[in-house]
Image (cartoon, rainbow, N blue to C red):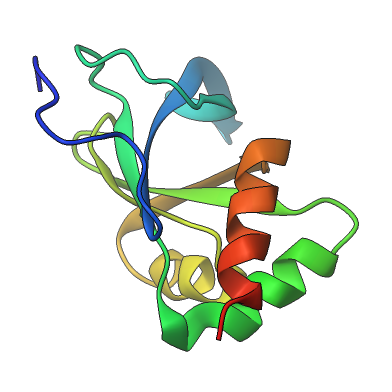
Length: 127
């Protein structure tokens, strides 16, 4: 995506850049490289390959509320396993993230930025 024609944020969507590092995982005699989610960039670089759309859904409000009340609210990045760089979606719902864990996806999480917490809280509080 070389040029963003749409705004990066609305009442229910926010285009966010995920920041990754690669790290080694050892399983027995095998060593593999896997991405680790280290943070989020809320004003994304439009040329980044690590853009994900966080979209809020009315049916997930309870999940968002529970996440916001946790000790450390998280955002979840759901990645296709082949190739790992493809972000399928971002979610603030731990339940939705767990559903993807049971499938052929890589689910990574990191602390939800304060600005996103406030945005999600505002959405949850709307009727």
